[in-house]
Image (cartoon, rainbow, N blue to C red):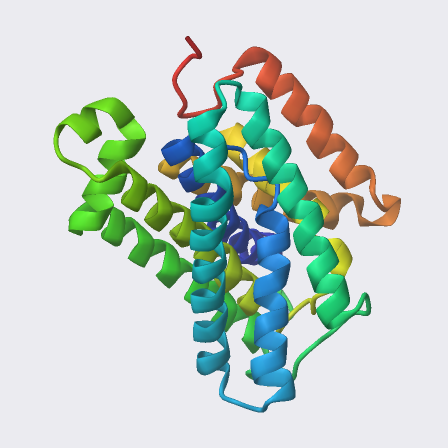
Length: 289
């Protein structure tokens, strides 16, 4: 039981950070960023390059991932999403654009880094062993703690900073925020950059555990959408709850059904379908319309 709880916290903290970036972008711009998983992968490759190839400290590599993905997110919003959303009256246009960006990032990652699995040295060696009831490598414990710290920092930033308050106002009512003097274009770019930065940080954290490869983007995006749907689209607290719920479901499923292979994810998807049929707005989302 202790092992399942620890695995749930470890997985949930990573998933919550991934979902936070996606739901922030959706709340601000009403855009489902299908390229979110590719941004996660790109963050992992930046950390791999700076930490694994150049030999710089892990903190520097993680900072490089955060800054690089923030820049990518800002450029994507400014040059791609902003013109399309201003000129198009159909929401499908932004969805198709997001899908196109996902394929573009896949192609760029393939050209620059190749398709092979990449990994980096462990940042902490050793294993924590509590009477054989809880066994957890120290690097996973550190990554879990860092993820929880980042989640706490993000919540504090959104709650108490001027930028965070502007982003929350923009998410609640875009027109009202603009009438109150909020620079909608600037804060949309800041929010998109922040969402991409969160994806890059998670990619940088997890490359030390799972490694990174080109094929991780799509599955990561699917999991992020699942977490957002569980918690409620556009609700930050819902994204965090959805991340930890998915982490718990995956940890329990892998512990109980490990001998059956991928049936764990099949049961998770079936459970999600049933849940959404009963409550389509998610746990904390408002009913549509």
